[in-house]
Image 1 (cartoon, rainbow, N blue to C red):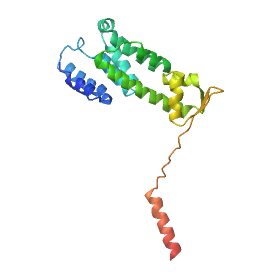
Image 2: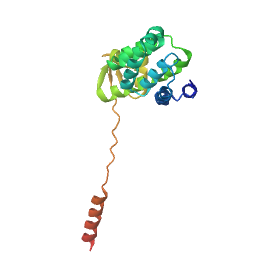
Image 3: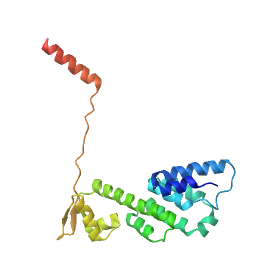
Image 4: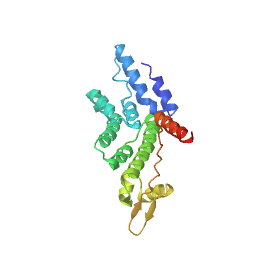
Length: 197
């Protein structure tokens, strides 16, 4: 079984392609009737799904993993622990699951990249859902210490009130594009033309 496309994607840090590459390889190998379960990079496959925010597919993959592999491969279980936290929306628990395992060399970069992407997702969630938030809650959502979380949001223009331990979210201006319907533009042109003549 040739897993070189997965290894190449990991080396190139094309983490957004990992899940698709694994899916295609799995279909190819399964269609050829090759036994692949023992050698399959399930942890990488799961982490690839988490990277692209596809928890449903990760959950279905988890259900197809043989019990023997779940019991013998702690990295697969550690990857799924991240999935469980994502599934239950235990935002702080995701960071605990990431830090709670000593990842293999091939998974380490993918996990670090996922952690960064997840922090950005949480930042966008906070941006859209809150107008103010406590520094403690902010640190939980971002998986950082309170000082690091405060520094992170201040760099993004948020306002910190040290006395009340609250952070005021700086909402980004919403850019609205006005879509002009060509028929409306045609009618306006005709109207202006008739006014002038």
